[in-house]
Image (tube, rainbow, N blue to C red):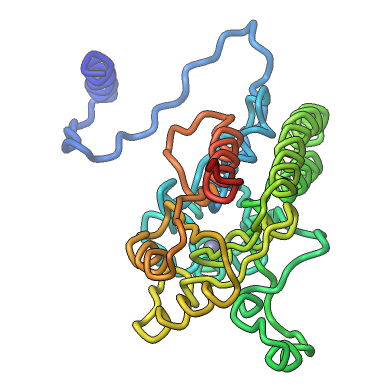
Length: 338
Ligand SMILES: [Zn+2]
């Protein structure tokens, strides 16, 4: 690094002396003037177009990484910090605007997940190409409400359902497989030369995710009690696909803890419905949910929807976390040894 800088400086000084002009030493940290690129080796093939693809959320980034394995002309980055989780109320920073402006393509979760990004996104780069990973998917669930309005009278009120869809497809392996195939098809259209790579990767990854989905269904079929309480609507699809029943969520708004009166109501709901456990998520603090579980006399445990994760997550991170979730469900809800 040091040597390279010195060589570059030397080259600049030499060039300046040769040209007979005054040399202005750039301040440290200032941008170096762009020198004409050295001629590349004559033997190498023409460099392929490098696509700068940005993913909005951690799970979409992880899925896309699996889809582009072996395709070198894609530069893949994650917009939100990996640890953030669902960006329901994410505040866009100047740094994000710069990242967006530099990207060619943005792959989003869709279904309203990136609502807080919509406006800044247009400001950052009006012509940024956006791939909606949930485009065209059917059998969507409505967002929230369902867990809170289980009484028949209240259900009737919601017959004319205008609620937005639940955006948390990623937390169900079955839906994740559909999202993965969707991403592969969108990338294949964008970069036809890589189509076969994207489709082959997606096929094998989606097959593994579907196998996981079957394991969830098989496990849930053995559970004596399939009623659960979750923190927010993140497990809606996993519950539906695997046969679990979410009887309540502890956060009416994602990230917003229940007030004292709501906590009392939640404890009553757990007792009335006979829910088996309260599940918390690594992306939110679990103290309040644990208190509710203790009050209601049911166990609580962590189920990870893979909404967030480590920035250096291995490619099989989703599969590993879901395998742990299977174990957790079995331990929490499975038949107890007596
Ligand atoms: Zn969420």
